[in-house]
Image 1 (tube, one colour):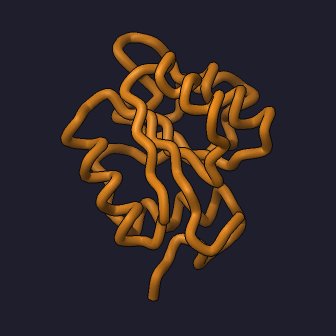
Image 2 (tube, rainbow, N blue to C red; image 1 turned 60 degrees about the vertical axis):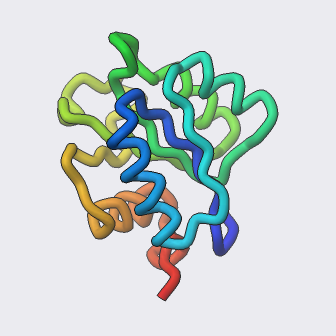
Length: 125
């Protein structure tokens, strides 16, 4: 993990995606790439492996677990962000930190720390 991580966001709600992007940049991310569909996220992963990812669970009626599997395969830490809680996650993903919407920068920092074990990697202070 770098000091200023690159982050993939998979989020289909534009207002949430842009707010999350702003939070990540304020917290020290250097490069934030946004995907609004599962196919777009997988295409981005064809050309770039991020340091970290934030995945909305429900993307236009589909679950983002395929993207989660690909990130896991590459050893990329990630968190889920959802309005549905974590009760629906498959057993293999039960330990992935999950942010409940709405969330703020402190929630994001805590989830980042839980996913990476790096308490201050996403902090510019």
